[in-house]
Image 1 (tube, one colour):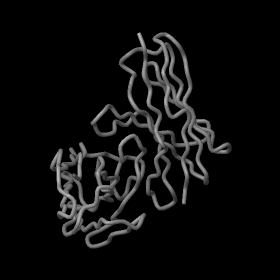
Image 2 (cartoon, rainbow over the protein chains, first blue to last red; image 1 turned 60 degrees about the vertical axis):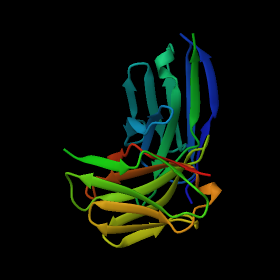
Image 3 (cartoon, rainbow over the protein chains, first blue to last red; image 1 turned 30 degrees about the horizontal axis):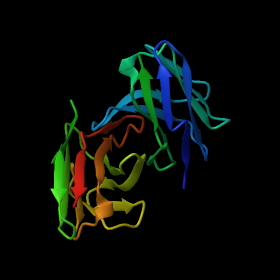
Image 4 (tube, rainbow over the protein chains, first blue to last red; image 1 turned 120 degrees about the vertical axis):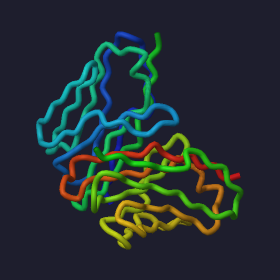
Length: 110
Length: 113
C-alpha cells in the first residue's frame, strides 16, 4: 500500500514568517496534489503537480515536486491569518486511487 | 458544468442503527467515484471506489459497505453502526478519461452515540 507522510503534523507560526511543509511518499508517482481543508468543510484543491520538477505558486503558497526523491514541499511565504487551515498532500497510485497524507494543521498567530 | 451532491450534511445515529449516505454527480457520465473517511484529528482514508455501475472495490475491511446502483449514484451503508464509525465522510469523483481532476463533495459529519 502506498504510504504518504507529512510533517510537521502541527504548525504554529507568526504572521509574516516563512515555513515549509513536507510530503514524502513511498512508491513511484508522477503526480501529487495539495488540498486545503477549513474546519468542518470539504477539501479545496490548491495545486496539481504533474511532473518531476514542477513548481506552482498561488499567492503566498508555492508547491514543488521531486519525483526522484518522492518528495513534495508546500512553502508558505509571509504567512497571514487567512492561511490557517489543515493542508493535505495526496498521491494517486497506478489505479488512480488517492492516498492522503496525515495532514498539517497550520495556525497563523497575529 | 459538473457538480457533486452529498447528503445529509450532519447525522447523529445510535450505536446499532443502520446508515445510508448518498452521493450523486451531475453533468458527467461514467465517473469514478470514491468514499473517504476522516476520523477526528486524523487524515483521510480511502474506503471504497467504483469505476462503474455495480463495481465496488474496498480498500480496508470494516463495518461499512458501498453500492453503485446507478451511473452517477454512490451509496455508503452500514447495517449496524459502531462508535468507531464516527467521522467525516467525503465523496469524491473524477472523470474516467481525465485522471488529474478530482472533486470532493461537501461531506457528512456522522456522530454515533
